Amino acid sequence: MITSYKQLPVGLYLDICEASQDESMDELAKQVRIIALLSGTTDDEILNMPIADYQRAVVASDFLQREYQPSGRCASSYKVGGYDLRPFADWTKMTAAQFIDYQTYAGKGTEPHIVEIVSVVLVPAGKKYGDGYDVADVQRAIRDNLCVSDVLDIIAFFFSQYALFLKDSLTYLRKRAMKMKSGTEKETALKQVRL
Image (cartoon, rainbow, N blue to C red; front, side):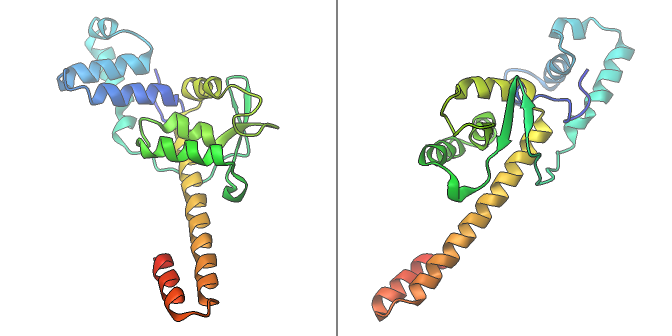
């Protein structure tokens, strides 16, 4: 049975999130489903286990009650489903396709599209985003093999890098606006780059 975020593949985490939000089940049915998912068994197998084993499984699943706190750091590479994936965090070198995909997935909500967002950030070693590899296959590998703690660490790191990129861009635009000579154009430009 999976007992920590480090052991929990992100795809299974998403399945657990879906089960916990399923309004057709009562709380006990949700608990059974979540324990079944963590155990790699069926709901019926959980319902037929001895009560002492069930209680131990409930205690073991308690880690889900605590929110994972991302470190904000990520590894230099991730071996996932036959891929050597490298984090891509330099926004100035991002391709338009990569940025558009990121914006598309993030605009639909982070949690349901977390695998797709991470697939924009993790690129196979020696490859450019979407070139020379199957993005859908990388997404499957991430969903099935990358633990949720690594995914959340990558997302936190990526968002912090994005915030720095935006800050640097605004600083640059503000300096350019300050160098403008015309009063009206300068005021308009400064209003557009104020935080």
